[in-house]
Length: 153
Length: 174
Image (cartoon, rainbow over all chains, first blue to last red; front, top):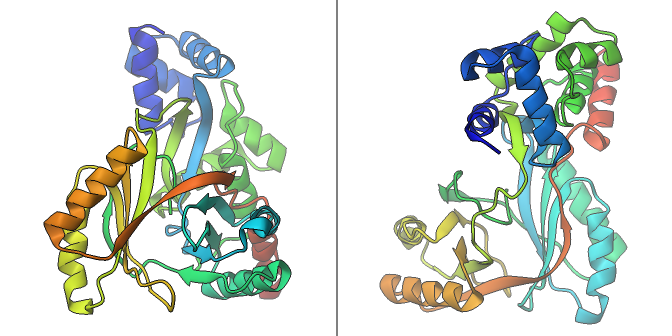
């Protein structure tokens, strides 16, 4: 990866052009032809440096509800219960943690009603007690440029 | 409030949350696939950004993670509601903390404030939490580490039931 590649990456990480010929725009800003800019991006995509080019949708922006949930599950059943929870597409993170409250998952749903319905269904299917809903009440900090590993609620 | 998203919006956004086709005219490829015009797809894509449906439209790189190897969920008991704003801000001020929230407590769970704490090792994270406890005077706290990952993915907003639901809403409107 040379300086030009880095320049392209900086540019398209912040914003990939939403225009008919995006690579002509990228080329213009980096001193390349449209073909050269495309060739470089394609090479970085093929080699895996670029994982994806697209939209990062935002649950809040879409008006959806996201929450953190916790369950106190018998340790010998945790794999089974976690598998049920992980089936739901709105569950994006699901971890065992070292506490009596041992199963933690995030849930994204179109509205509160869907959250309640999903948790009730999980409780009924898992038969492992209550799925506690812990929605954010107050936000003190979200450090967006922090490259954290989990819990992107 | 859930935003008005038409079945057509859901189809376009489903494409935008995948990776763009690797071609000189990616929006034309999407338009052709969906039976729309290139101009229309571009216009809608811009519109979703203006409406803040997405945070960012761009490239995601592999290995974006910095060198943090351990992260713990610090949970803090602050029974007096009146203290939570001040203590929440105090905990959030540590550079090792990426997220700080208040969440509800319940019987058997006496904690009110949550902080994600990052470090090189679990010991380091625990040491930061101990310092946070000393500095703030919070006596009851714990640090939870993940010991097993069952699922970690990014939300596929429009491929599953939300898309089906928007389609139903579209039906209901007709």
